[in-house]
Amino acid sequence: MNKLFFFFFALLFSLSSFSQKEDYTSLKPRKMNYNDFMKYSINDTSAVVVDIFLSKKGDAAYGQMSFLPITLVLAVFPPTAVIGVGLTFISAPLFMNGAYMLVKYRNKKLLNVLEEYKNTQSMPNWVRKKANRQLEHYESLKVDY
Image 1 (cartoon, one colour):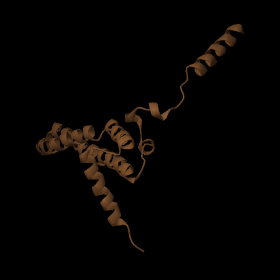
Image 2 (tube, one colour):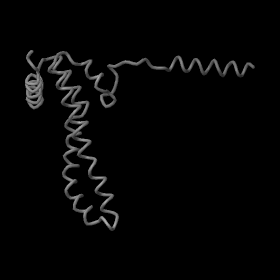
Image 3 (tube, rainbow, N blue to C red):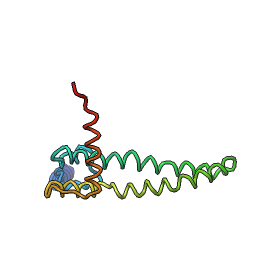
Image 4 (cartoon, rainbow, N blue to C red):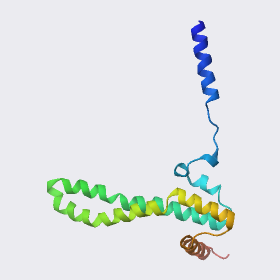
């Protein structure tokens, strides 16, 4: 009985003393999602920057990178080897571009851009151009009633 009591006491003590509180400032950027990044947004420009980064990464990069594994499987099997080799040569540059986009639009860079924009109200020119284009596009979609 005493051993069981000490075991449960040690278990509960270890669970309570070594548990961590959830803190969004210590959350790693690669584990952040859209809602976490929107907490760093201060106006519509920074919200557009979050949309640009996450849509480029999610839609374009992963979509381009998904073709190469499929064509490699086609190149291995004899009946479709000729077609698979040709498709592999076509999809290899898409895979490389998708990998480049994953690096260019990574979450850590987005977090750095948002923090810099919050502190200094400035952002890199390539991000500013994309954000301005996207804001103009959103303005053109508004309908006057």
